Length: 280
Image (cartoon, rainbow, N blue to C red; front, side):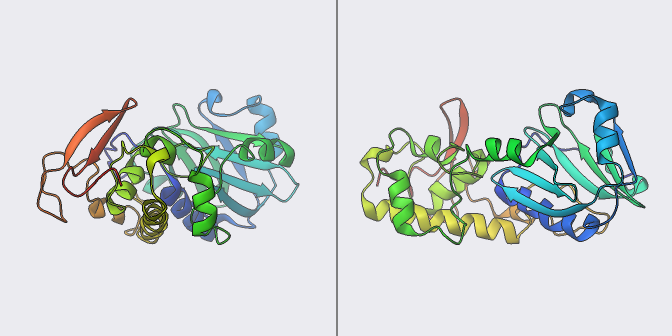
């Protein structure tokens, strides 16, 4: 086993999209041959029912929505996954599994999908309608092909409060968490504490472009969580080295050479460059 010491993390949209892509290549259309539940709190129904309803079904499609993965089964049911704080996914064989406790294991022949670190995260077996009720509460995604600057402006207009609070509100914009919110604000040259209601249209346009840019680059780089998803995975987590301000308190700003500072903003640790970033 690989000994992996994992820092506290909360997978965001790029991490979940990376999982979706890598898992899809491994398990699609292969019958489920075994299910192990090591922590019953991680599932939503009785363990025996959960297992019996999954056995011999197949995953025909994996959808990502915000920070959720939605596994479509061939019998019309869904497996809805949210990793929350500390959750990880690995797909492969037991001998290649990182040194972590697993809460749920779903085997597809010789390949097993492992869900790890699910203290608050979960794997719920639901109907399509139940999943729609959960995902229907989410806001749109900035990387969606239907999104444009005009629609983004309409989302922001009428909102109040700190910019970072807006970015991490899943009911307004889905998929962005603590880390990427800081990176987006930096690229947009806006303070995380900037008041949304005071932003000029030009600043909102910069915010839109920066959000698309940061999230798209992070997806292509495999997100920031560097625990491998498969045995031979050396791509996942490549974006971790690309962070400009997040978790870089006291370091030089890569843009101006100033010092990155850390503050608490609505109980979230927040990093920014006071020289580069402004109210507008």
